[in-house]
Amino acid sequence: MNVTIVDYNSGNISSVINSFKEVAKDKVNIEVTSDLSKIKSSDKVVLPGQGSFKSCVDALKKIDGLTDTLDEFAITNKKPLLGICVGLQMFADIGYEETETKGLGWISGKVSKIDNQNGKFKLPHIGWNQINIIKDSKIFKDIESNSHMYFVHSYEFVPNDKNVISATTDYSSNIVCSIEKENIFGTQFHPEKSDKIGLKMINNFINL
Amino acid sequence: MLKNRIIPCLDVKNGRVVKGINFVDLKDAGDPVEQAKIYSDGGADEICFLDITASNENRDTIYDVVEKTSKKCFVPLTVGGGVRNVEDINKLLNCGADKVSINTAAVENSKVVLDSSKKFGSQCIVVAIDAKKNGDRWEVFTHGGRNNSGIDAIKYAKQMEENGAGELLVTSMDRDGTQVGYDIDLMYQISCKVNIPVIASGGVGSLDHLVDGIKLGNASAVLAASIFHYGKHSVKEAKEYLDSKGIPVRI
Image 1 (cartoon, rainbow over the protein chains, first blue to last red):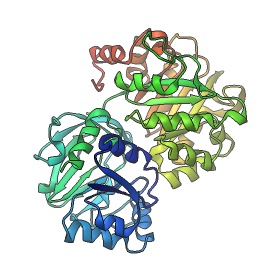
Image 2 (spheres, rainbow over the protein chains, first blue to last red; image 1 turned 180 degrees about the vertical axis):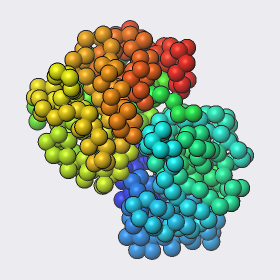
Image 3 (cartoon, one colour; image 1 turned 90 degrees about the vertical axis):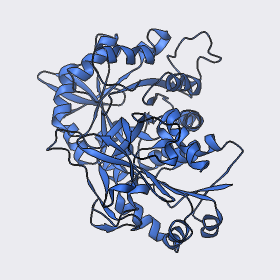
Image 4 (cartoon, helix red, strand yellow; image 1 turned 135 degrees about the vertical axis):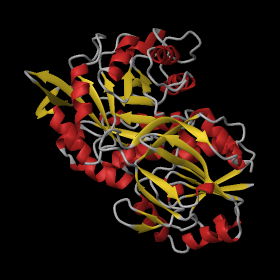
């Protein structure tokens, strides 16, 4: 099996690579590339993302044909794809970080700044928070609700269809932190930095 | 609920831990990779490396340490010490650091913070502030505490937030190494002025000091080095103690 981590200059992805390689051992081949034919032929795709919504969308678009290839992979061919952090946020129609920017439009909704209740809560939302699993998602197999995951973000994905939400977390408000829509998965938290439970989630994705 | 973080810090010089944990089962007490792994297995919420390598020719040793650690520890890794420019930050991130802390360079040229947070995102830019009391205010020190910039630490903290820092690592120079506790007043003043998380550092000698840093100093995270050295306290003990005092921690 081939799992491809999309390398599109979205910031630091070495931790994502290390964690997937740790879990995959020698059983699964982990590719790190922006090569379109390799993405097309892989079994699963991981879409990481760091920095701002706009910078990630811009970086995706800079690679000729990449968004079309991802569309084909996830929407037409319905193969498993996992978005992490801004990788998840980009599933939305639109994001408001820096300036209004169109997303991939895979899951209807928007990405807006977390309401910090007039400074009562610090932003970014950094650190370990518990996830409330509200939908039986395949990537949460053998992971309990209230498990701790590592977060670092100031913006949140607000999907229109609440049925896609698989987990939320409580901060200044109830924040969507994981989604599952058919073959498309996404986490706002960083499984690659979430210790053993994060690695377990990565393992679940690899074994889908 | 968001948990308060406990961050053990390891001083690394020429690729070796200066003051390490003195555990009997350690194969190599000076190996930062092995020590970091012990911390992460023990429940550390993050690991911090402070590179205190003095000479330029040995500066590259930290990259090797970071690369090896990031393949074994799957909690956030912050690296600081000797970070001069965007290229240094880029190199550390590529080696597997999740956050980079900038100290002297941020004082000398605040554009480093602005440029790097734009390029890599605020989430990986930590500004380290070494502050020392002078009369009724605190002043920012650079070069490992040797030079006084004369800059007001609280105003500087606010400015660094505006420049794009994702977090502030605040160390009291008066308390560092004394083991008498954090400078609570300094932590509280800065934490209340900024809307980004503050990591308290400098002066921890007991587990109660960690409690004070969070409860009284309003810090989001507490960093300590020496209480975890020589096995005086484990990270696990620290977390259980904080939990017993009603502080939310990840256990």
